[in-house]
Length: 359
Image (cartoon, rainbow, N blue to C red; front, side, top):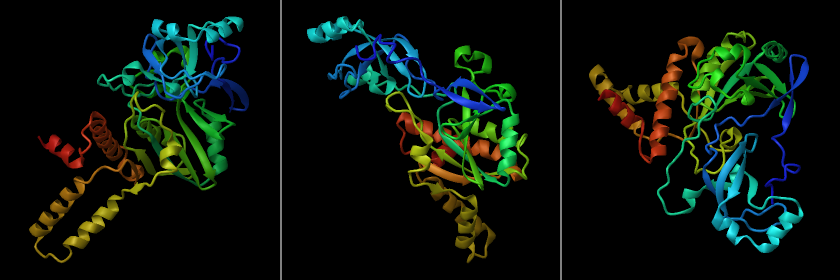
């Protein structure tokens, strides 16, 4: 019934042709967050969902997951519970039997179901969405000034961890070959063989002067900057700034986050430390006493640290001058604040974090 056991209608996730190093090969387009459902989880179909074969409302149907197939849209196979089976219309059961389908089972896109607990009045137990390499899913986009488009295409084509994907016109960064040396919470060998190679990030270029890399965790972002600096000469491209989404997602959010939904369509705060320094110079310029200047500056910085953290933010990267340490600290603080917000402490700010560090 629906997409139940009708494998001829709903097969494994489509494989996309990827051009790599002068020849084509197939790789599965893995969803780049670890799916928060597991086999054995109880789920309920969301309100308004209809069976695609028989066009009946199936919102509220409940069952347990017995199989999961990952892809652009994860597919969960569900075996309906006794209550759901007993309420099925006889006409639907007969139609399933006529079409040689098992009415006790169905496969649905993950976005059309939710944990059964969410449908009741029980307290929701939040489950973090993490990447396949086990970092908290927090979106980031790294921007590069591009000076030689042909040269960077050549560099990418020579790297075994890079592959060109025609459909979306992007270079994908794969967790294999040169990138296997990168250390994540879940190592390369701990990732199921059938899911390899997973995609660590995707490079896009909308013009000849810029290229950007989308990644799904802050840890991947900082590792990417260091990694690609080894292979991309600074005369070809240089990292300039980063967009970050200071938000953590969980299993109750419903849909997996996409970079374009936030970095292309949401107002972004430009966080430039240089601007803050100019503000400090302006407010202290009329004060002659050095101690008074310090007091005024500290007060201003204290007030600034109490401001809410913007959900979408852009700030410059000074990797070539300062190394990666400064960026690591900035991202770690934002992840800590976002985690507090996710836990329910919505008013938590940089000021609160600094007070904890001082203690």
